[in-house]
Image 1 (tube, rainbow, N blue to C red):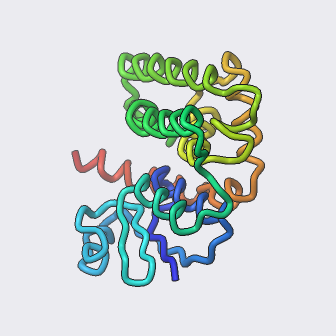
Image 2 (tube, rainbow, N blue to C red; image 1 turned 90 degrees about the vertical axis):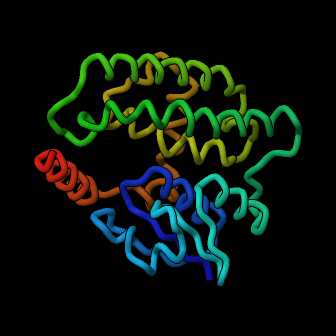
Image 3 (cartoon, helix red, strand yellow; image 1 turned 60 degrees about the horizontal axis):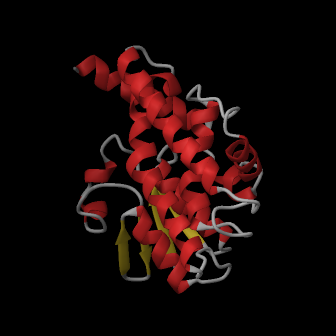
Length: 219
């Protein structure tokens, strides 16, 4: 039995959740509240780095979301979510890595905006928006006449980038108007059941916002 330890607001968690749904797998969902549950002994036995997500398959524990995605693709290859042709596979990997190493860090200065919190730093926001624009321009060029990155079918690249970009558009104040292919791609993704069923609720955002406010007051 597959068990996913996650937090609803976590984009890293969500990419695994989406993949499990897209592959039609049965799994148990266990929420880890980041107010301290990640440091409890039971969870540390699964992931000593106290991060989400973590996936347990029977007695095998996997940490780091990209490793989890590779595990799911290797063990449960239907539907296929990684192309085999060299160029297409490289496109998928580039999108995954740029999403994790460039796009995701650029979200951090926008957290105040996304959560409607005070204290936004205009200089850092401007730098973040420039980085995001660079990534979106790069991604827009990578999408060809196919609906997904490197494939006619959904790939792991779409899962990783597609759990970040829509929130930038819906909550981060980032317009996709200058990136027509990405705009169409993003609009199509969010209509898929996997995206709709894994979307964080307003309650989850409110809880995370409350936790952030508490931390800000402590500091």
